[in-house]
Length: 243
Image (cartoon, rainbow, N blue to C red; front, side, top):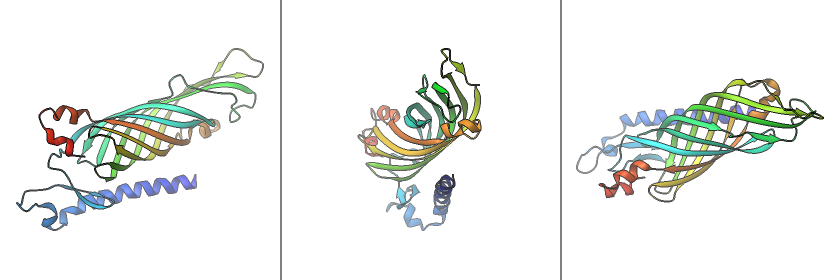
């Protein structure tokens, strides 16, 4: 838990520093923000320094991501399906809503955390969240970002005791869910990207006996489809050169 607190502190510090650096750009020399013809050129801060934005840059963009995850549930690897819908502001700020669930749940052969006599259990978690993602680096082919989620959802499940036949249900429990992660993207084309990353999920409202089940590391697999660029490319062929 101490290591987790350190990781979370580092992530939050990086986000804070990036915001400070972004706004401090106001005081930079005018030459940074102007081309030779003295037309305004926008820039954003990333970990490699100030990055000029392309001529076709738009302040606001629609952001849609298929956001699949692999996570541990009672020591069993489970696939957590999800998607994100939101907006992108000035290329490096993304925020919106995420929706995640385990589908029909995860079946485990034992559940020592709750009762050693359990021989079979089905566990599920689903939650919706608001998220903020800060892009820390980008170029034509790569992107690195940090993301924080805060959401609410529900944990459910049932179990069978040794010698029993009929499943017994766990009490439904509404929970808060928090997640911190880092993701890298590779742009396969100008409108399609794939990415992967790692993170950690916290479920502080879960009953103490099952917190270790739902507090777990997360592996991330993402697919980003840039529908807006596809549509705009019909009348603006140069948009495919932005990234």
